[in-house]
Length: 238
Image (cartoon, rainbow, N blue to C red; front, side, top):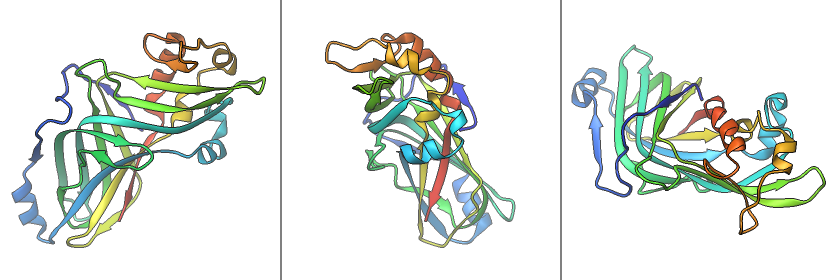
């Protein structure tokens, strides 16, 4: 993830009718003239093994294991540059809750038309919903304390932000092909500034869960929120 951009406007309501804005769609398709492909937007969490085997000095030293969750977006924007220099932009305004484990959105974002060809640059931006108190990001799992005891963990993030996820991939799309643009989140990096001592001594709610929200364990929440712009990338699969 390259940056986290504050939003000062309300996102669209969840599960409402959608609008797809194709920026100069007809003109750029005519200019490229190589057919079209379909972009499908997905999301996932990086696996704990991957997180702890790469750049471990920049990741939380405690024992976290996230096993479920979702990201709830109100809009997704695709930017790409074809190798011939043509810039492509597509924006989809649709409230979609994307499950981190299955990668599936409800409703899905699987019908974005983009020109076929070889892209030297691709980027996905996802705007989080913030219309009410429902969290835009939820991650659940377990935390194992330094004494060996474990506790269920739930993290909730509720703020209208824009995640920008870039990739260094060069992708080639043939006509009528479908490419999956996956937003890959590394939550373990989010906890970089949180000490094991803070997690060990965190408050537990009435349900026995180590809950981290803007109103519960706020000190941990603030540190985690500060790390949100450090660990999101995009991966394109075709």
